[in-house]
Length: 332
Image (cartoon, rainbow, N blue to C red; front, side, top):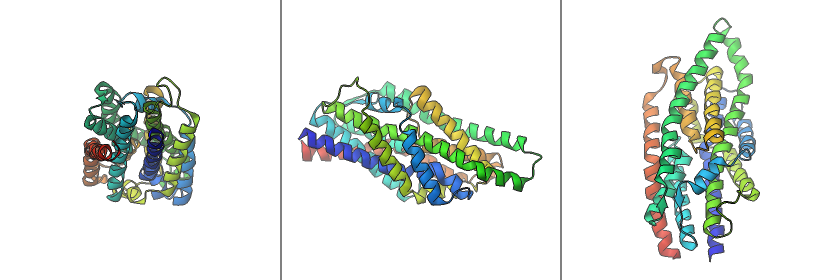
């Protein structure tokens, strides 16, 4: 029974990873596609490959998710807790994808773990949630906005005497590099979250020690699932990020991607913090747009996005709690 549950949880985790990929594909390619630096299919392929590579560059974020958020009970009961968390995160991903809102798959997963654990009366590490999730959730968008604006101002100053048309055309050739950088950061951040959940399920099921390293097959499976999801593409969210917040040109697209990828690398490698790729990229786009003029950013659309951000953790927690109760009634 427990083996069947573990296999089921791993499958559901990889499904979440896939939805994370197509939900967050826009993070990596929306700017490059909207500026016509890359065609959609080439951009998706580039993002998928870089996601796969990025997933193999570290496990610090996976360790945080697997060990630092909740203590699930051992055995079948703990596996039901993890399954409930994943179902809640998947449902919230699909809801926000349907409405084209670039919400955070990361925070959906964290909210799912907390909601399912609370419903099961399991231990939630609130200090870890605050330090590794809530604080980065507030700080990373601010950094994305500020750094995006700073990079764009630097570009405007360096190329202030250049021909605008020629400069824009030059950045169109350079932008695939920054798109690859943000896709690498997405793999480094988001694929690791699924690795952490699979690791947690293996610990709960008694198949691995809590102090063990994450197995290579877990890393490869998570990397493959998010890459396939990315290649499937989330076109609804892509339109929101690429055009509805602000109309981007190649220099601004490059600035946003460069700023967001810098924040992602710093958080993952330096602090092991599971920050939101979506939040960081979206606010970087806003920061870049604000350098043109404040009214260039469609703040109404931005407000809807921020509302979805605020709702993500509690909404995913609620859905996960309900999913846990349903699974508990059926399985246990």
